[in-house]
Length: 388
Image (cartoon, rainbow, N blue to C red; front, side, top):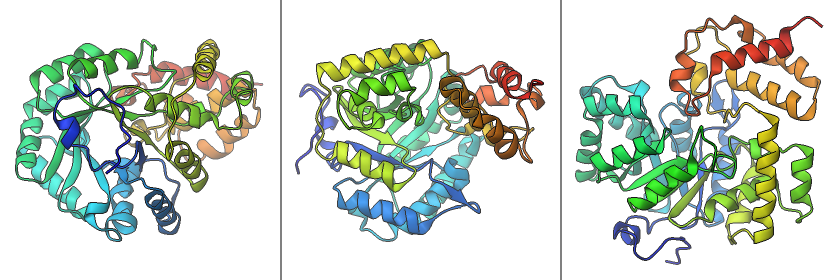
């Protein structure tokens, strides 16, 4: 099998054996598909799955909580029931909101297998690990349970997805050397961002010789829709999309075995596939342009929400926090006054407004970006609800 993976030959032995099933370096993250009446369109998703597979890609990423619980189900209907098990790689996760004790983990895991329509997961990750969640997972012996499932053949590869400081990542890797792979947020904006510290987290993975899976290479889609002066820098380089540069950036680092993209439609899928089917690293000129874009975006003081939507489900005021942040960013970047309409007539109809936040803090506890959401909602309210 021709594996186009970029890593040093000194990597731990599992680098040669654990990931030989991976055909190419682009993974399909099933977490941002459009929903209609609580479901993802089977017709549209089947078309995307088939195109992805025909193009030589085979890696799919889900979690029990993605898309309001629909992600695992649509993968069953459109992927796992239609392809041989050996033809695709499926990653699922153990999410903290789905269990409160060790006794609940195995039944949840079995339910995930059942919903997905498979009898094992290729990768199973401890989801969104940070310092606080790591304590919970340890107290519930979640890592030990997952390793037992791996011994039983129900999990092929065991790992974590991670959102916290590099020293916390190092602590986890020290305590659990059995971890085979680490999934981190990694893109050209977050590389040196002190709130995310992508570079330092990546360097910890390299120090412990752990292969890396990249999430948020396009930062929740924000790097696909750039301000005019930033987009112009890429237009001067050619006709490639802004998203394609972001994905190529993430894929170009040693030890990165997979770049996930939460593709929402066929246009995004075709663009990403065209870039990664015959991957080529960024040139010196292209890297310099991304450096300039990072400086431009930093000057805008945007809300760095990636629209993971973890905050929405638990909000007692039913505030669509990522959508309100997106309105704020769009108005800030583009002076798009249509965002006033979207705020009033779309995103807050029968939902909470920013000013209705009761400051309970539930959103901040679950936010992977560690945003000060309560204070940011004050800014949003000031922008969209002040008297004209």
